Figure 1 (cartoon, rainbow, N blue to C red):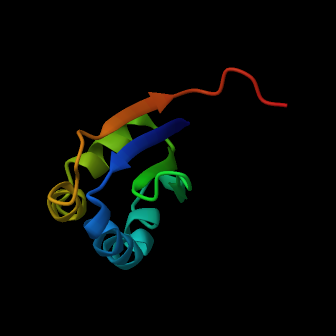
Figure 2: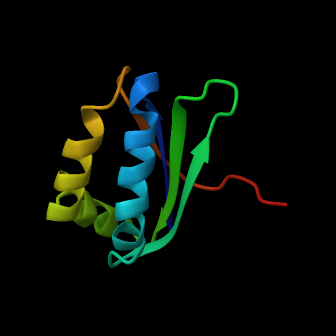
Length: 97
């Protein structure tokens, strides 16, 4: 299983646009083959920093998603809202209690 974390910082006046976009796309992303879990996290102190946390069966399925039309359309609409370069990590659980 692959855990994917993406940090995104938006122009403050674009936060609502991002929220609307995510609300429209979240079910399609979650139902994409290989996606096991999807969450949107918000950094409460900043008001404009968000993280997506997703879990994927395999790295290959994540890559298929990243090359899909759904990803291209969603990312194109999202990236114009950024005020900083997004950061993304694929991570494995090292310890779980």
